[in-house]
Length: 337
Image 1 (tube, one colour):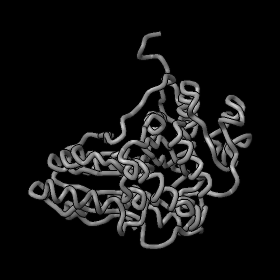
Image 2 (tube, rainbow, N blue to C red):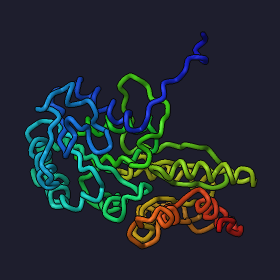
Image 3 (cartoon, rainbow, N blue to C red):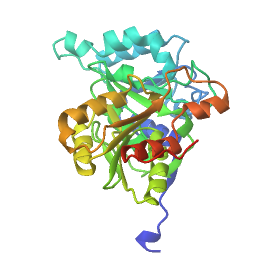
């Protein structure tokens, strides 16, 4: 069998996360996990499955139902030299622990003149698509990106999940790893060895010449579907996945905008005040003279996430809406109903 015939190992998104944590814990005994039901149960989505069995109850800790206490435990442990991974289950629950996240984790390094290290990783399940209703389906990454001191990471593939999670764990500053709930079962090629993807480095998922599509998380796969549709119409999309929203790789995004002269930014979060607005602003500051059309933005409507599967499907941006947004930059009519 030749090298080209060797089958590449496929791993689900959820197991890519699990493997990153497992391999890092084997490498560094200062790493431990804490969260609701992550022990014997393995977490509500199975992301921590089997870890307590391998590493014991002192390193995979079931906590009470108190998000403030979970993050507070992580902050204190990080300051004392450990590398905690604390899980808040749903991204919506970040709001319960915002004082600990915003006023403690994000600021302690600055409050102590740079002498304090906070190697804390906060993980959560974000995004809609599972009919989990308004309190369990939000995409709140823009709130977190606004806080100096936090790093915000949103993987779009199993490969990126493993590599970015390794970098989060090794980072000496607080990071938030957002796992998209609807992507947990999505499989893709993932190397068995431990590897890291640097934070703050975007990935050009699909090279193109006619329009730049900036998308992250699950919207990358929807943008890829839209690009396939538009290729049949003679439009070649370049898809840029920031991977890390804070810090943001503005240089790669701006360079792509200067090359293609058109940009559409896509995210599942509410369009108003979303990270797309920041990206659009940076592009007009750095590449205004290169643009042949205004920067387009595609996001969710200004509404809580519906519970109804039919309404939720309308609420979440999809390939058809992305394709129409791209057509609009060329002055072409929409095709979706």
